[in-house]
Length: 23
Image (spheres, rainbow, N blue to C red):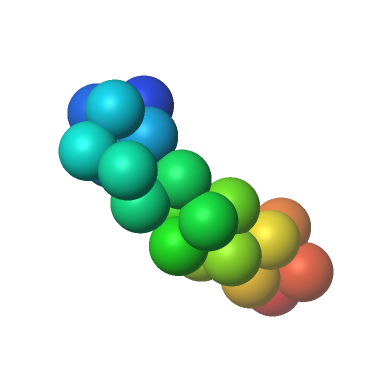
């Protein structure tokens, strides 16, 4: 996950994390 943040896709990662948290 943190790797994607460095790639510049932090927004996408946050969205995925929120979906997992809600599930």
